[in-house]
Length: 324
Image (cartoon, rainbow, N blue to C red; front, side, top):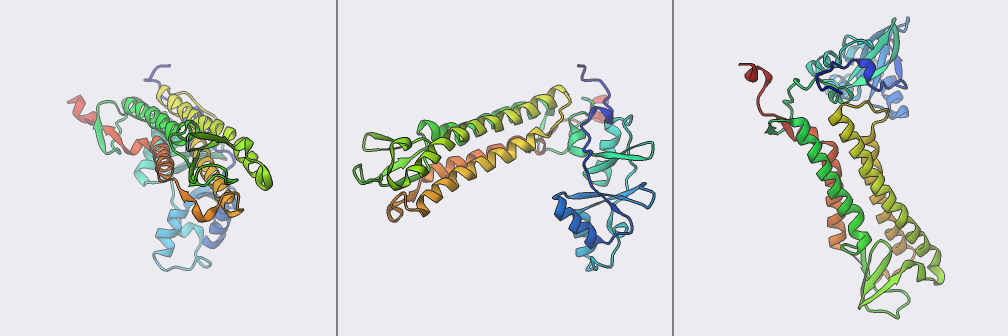
């Protein structure tokens, strides 16, 4: 696929489940609808279902809360932003420019006066022409697209190592505590699948007694944990690769990978907390493995960095300078 191709809105995956709100509604109605739907923006339509604007949570904060206005009395039309909608045939660069100039993140997509959904500035970014300069990053580079791609791959590999492989192979654990029953060494480190200390390895599958089911759950989720870590890394790689090669995707894989990766780490730590709370480990002698916390923290940092790579690199020389 040529990098010089001009992509249209039809090439994007349009969010067709976006919610709308009447132009006659109050800002409070809009805020409640955003909360119930778990979304940050609503398309504002009039009585004839024509698009008149977009109201975002940011607009409510800056144009209403900061001004001391009443959310019950103010209409959505008083705080929304107006932006010319796009159609399926609109170039992606045009949609991106409209959102960039207004510093907003959503633009409605209409066809024959009917609302099809919305496109986001993030969706548009991966489909801009190669000549479109990237001026938002911190570090100037000759080719932001290549640097973004390479950086995402590196950050994803580091996430997988620190977050998944390290506790699996025994480089960093979760807890340090005596083994139960008290036939082992005074202190062992609890990793993903087993506890190690005093030259011995204690598989969670062999730890029985009153808490046998807890240890079985921990061992089983260890396998799930590894699979979800790999899935998270693969999802972000798929997004980065598609963005680099300008391939259309039907899902926001970077968001899925981010949520799965962070949620997976939190669940694993929560299981060890439950092990402590229910007394499967002698809590009075237990302590958090500082190296394990550090590795998990690094994993989350690398995962977030992989998804937020666009704020790191920018075009070293603007297009205008190059043409001169």
